[in-house]
Length: 375
Image (cartoon, rainbow, N blue to C red; front, side, top):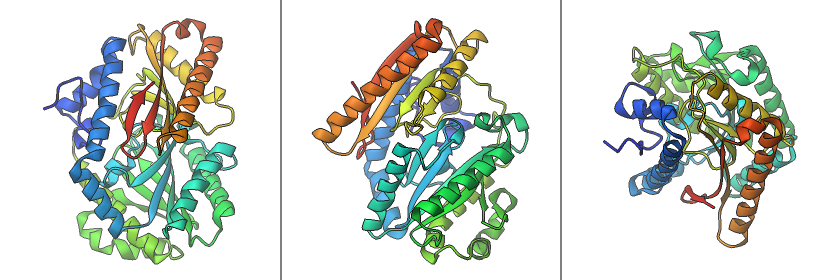
């Protein structure tokens, strides 16, 4: 059992069920701010160690050799929406794009640039791209839905359809190189819901292990226009999700989780943060970054005012990934520092009292190893 200040890797299933690690992660929000920050940094270190371990590295290489389609996910920053964990997929296979509320627009200059670069890198290597565009909701309680859409699941679904249409405009509507797929995530059961263009859906929570052998036929029926290679490489995610959902049936899970976030994370490279209600993660995609930063700061202030977290401070952490030493890393350092200064200025102007309790840190991430380096 790891020490309490250092929880296990993010794919450990114990983080959201009753276990020692779960209680460590859940109760960390009550600790003094210095302990919380130390715990978060330790979490990042553990994630990098696991990502680079021989077993994880070989599992990732073996998986990609068998399933070469690149999988990208556009998702809300909500820690409950943990697609690799919910599909039993090795670390590093699924490339996430995370945003407060799951709001995206492929017309945003930086987002369009990053997504297009990722797609072009995949296609140059001869791989197709499966782009999962997600929304999330709770079947058991409307109030546990996506706060970014005011728990309005219909509005969230409509937004994903808009992004899907943008992806078709950007990469072509034939879906032969890039196949955008609207995918729901039901947070009570961790079940995926796959939607086609006709409005039909495949809800994994409605299936049992007896249906596993029939999944290829169901997927073919649902998405007959999806290339065969994409279907072949989507099936492991669906089968993994079926196993995951089945394992959780009847499990004692804490579903009514109050907001108690104590960190605002701006930038990219926060793959280690998939814990519910710990951090508000803002991807650097929206041209008006001040808007999500103000919303996030308002949530932190409300958490302090309601006593859900101590009022001794909160963390502002910015991050930018780099692939190579030299200019690439230097640019990442400049970008992360800019994001930190910008976010601190916005918070200072809008929430001066909260800003006095802000601990600001900037970092870069060595992307090949996922190592977080504080500046």
